[in-house]
Image (spheres, rainbow, N blue to C red):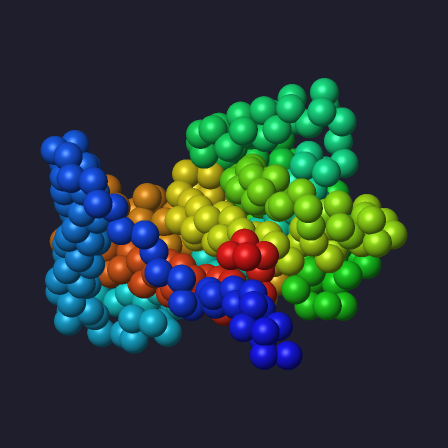
Length: 333
């Protein structure tokens, strides 16, 4: 027993005991230059972000100091008045509602398209389909806006009437007024179409990185294709799906021209999504910046600061969710 014990193979070292190898080769000039450029780029990015935040905060303080209303809750926008009154409650409501509608439509469809391209479609069909999705991501937003105003708005009028007739009891689909479909519901659908290629592209690339052994192991155990996707692909790509969704949400929050072309804005907060009206931060800034006076421009910049903070909070929340989910993903195995 003593001999057997002494000749036994020692246990393998734990992952925590493995130390990274240190290069003993002399550093080269190219490595030093690349390190300096990388470090400088990171520092420059932080400096630019800080400069933007300082500029927005300074101009926002000037605007809020002249404001006679509550900046966050007042629905009136009258910077030219004496005294000036401006609030962003309507803009915050419209920005969040339109983005939520867009995400609710785009994320499930994008995941389905990504799964079809990566795991279901034949190779001869998957490559052209992926190329088409890439092209859709490169279309300028003004083109989407013109298409939405000329094609989408007239054809959604029938859908709005159907929703009002059969889903009006839900209040949000109760169309209380008349008019064409230049409302938050149409804006949400248009934003969903715009962010769909972005979410699809990133999600597809994440699904293609799933280790082949994971899928083959599930198939060897008798799992169907859907069960393989549910047990191997989706858990592995959960963090990537969240990241792709946040990229799409960032574009939906900051979209300007497409919303400005389609929406009939008004400073009224209404839960009736089929009624014309509402507004978003970016659309309001683009529409009123040229005609605004000194206080009005400061007020618009202050609303841009709020959008800036919302975007930072959304991305911070996404990073927190990804960090919590990372230990359950196979990405770091």
